[in-house]
Every structure is written in structure tokens, then in C-alpha cells.
Image 1 (tube, one colour):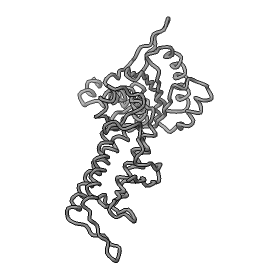
Image 2 (cartoon, one colour; image 1 turned 135 degrees about the vertical axis):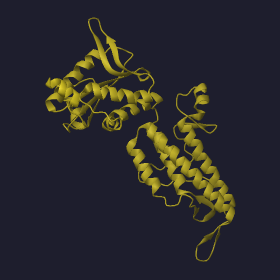
Image 3 (cartoon, one colour; image 1 turned 45 degrees about the vertical axis):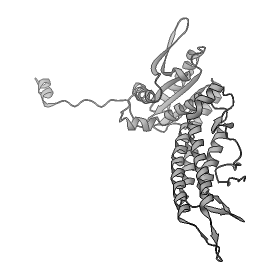
Image 4 (cartoon, one colour; image 1 turned 180 degrees about the vertical axis):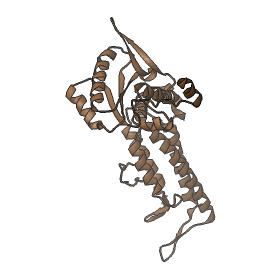
Length: 329
């Protein structure tokens, strides 16, 4: 039987027989361009783990159908047996596990808004064990939560078709940089300069990317430039800027334009991020992007402006009594 997955507000309806993100291969997903070795190595990848979990739910739903033996009375009510109820409870358990895995998969892709929508939609199901008979065919059952997860998975697959792991990880870097103010707060950092922001962000990125390092050298004939942070596996450089007001922001933008020229021409680095950390809401992301467009600069550089705590003056150390007495003498 071919079931049509229900249309949900934020997802596109897809057919259960559709092959998301490529054809299935022995229960795994065969993505475009995969070699035989890739297919063998991908059995335990995140996409395949979620796909297998969805399939387990689908198989359990079939078990529910086989034991349902639903009978409809004159009032249209359905009655079930105890074995069916146990199988339905286990399906609910599998659905909750799959829901958690699906959230982790969406988070990995970096689609934060999609994640929020997905969680909100799933939370609307008051009882994930509830099964509805297909009209005119009570032997077939529908699980709205399962259809919801399958639709979300298929939609996400369509969104990221063509994105390899490298692009997904670059999206992760961008998400980290956009959350710089929260990372600074979590690390209990007290930023007073570009150096403070750079140290905090480097420490966090090194937890995600083992090859993240600071002061990456880019050599030219007469001059050697140093990028703030580099991630070799992603061929990515990150330049960090710090501004307290609009005049400082303009100066930092000039610095970014100079960096664009200095870092160009080295094939080891092809992805660039400019993180601008301001202590006041000086400019929006849209204004910075408009500035980029007007200046006709290298668009391979992705500007990211965030607003967080900080100042330019470090708090003075408090003198102890002994120090005061010594100064007085």
C-alpha cells in the first residue's frame, strides 16, 4: 500500500516511496557521487542512523496493524486488544528516540529556524502512541508523529542535496560565529579588545575542529600576513574585529578590505569569515552586507556582525592594604 504523507505547515508533502537524498542502498541512503567505498563507510552516518530509526518505527507500525483487530461499534468507536496496546506503546518509545535523533541531525546541518519549527510541530502531538485507522480501511493505521518525522527528514534531505560534509561544517562555523556573544558569556570572558574575542572563539572552535589554530601565516613576496584563526581541514580563515562605535566600525571594515587582498592567492585558504564584534548595536547584518555590495569586494568573504558585552578599558586592580602602606612610605 502506498501512503501519502500528510502536508504539514512548514514542510513539503512527499510520498513514502520517494527516495530522499538519493536512492536507498540496503537500508542506507545512496547520495549522488558516492563511490562503493563511500557507501560502505556511510552505514553509520547521521543520515543513515535517522533513516534506520524511521524504518524501525515503520516496521513497528506494521506490527501494530497485524495485532490491531479493531472493531467499530455502532457509535463509530474502535476497540483494541492488550497486545496491540503494548505494541503501540513500544512504537511511541521508538518515535521519541527518532525525534531526538532527528533534532541532532537538523542541528548538525545548521538550520536553526528549521529546528525550532520542527520541535514546535512535534510537541503539538499530545499522544505519540495514538494511531488512526485509514478511512474505509480500518486494517491500515496512520501515525501522525511518524508521518511528521518522515516529512521533516525528506524536506531536510531536499534542502541539503549537493551539500557535502565540508559545506555542512562551514555552516557550523558560521553558526558558532553568529553565537559569539553567548559563547563569550558562557566562557565568562570580559572582552576589552579583538585579542580577547579571538582567544575565546579559538578555544571554542578547537573543541569542534582539532586543527583550528591561531595566527595562520600567508606569505607574499615582500610581506607575510597573519590571519586570526584558521581551520585547515575546511580551508577556512576567520578574521576577528572589535568595535565600540561607528567610527571604529568603519576603521575595522577598512582593515577587512586590506585583509581580503593580503589573504588572496593562497589555494590553501578559499573560505573566509569576518567576525565583527561590537559592544553596542551599531549596525545590522543587512547594513554590513549592503556595504559589502556597494564596495564590490570579494564576496567569498562572509561578514558576520554581532553585539555583545565589553569595553576598551580594563578594570584597574585593587590595591591591598600592604601595597597602600608601601606606596604611602
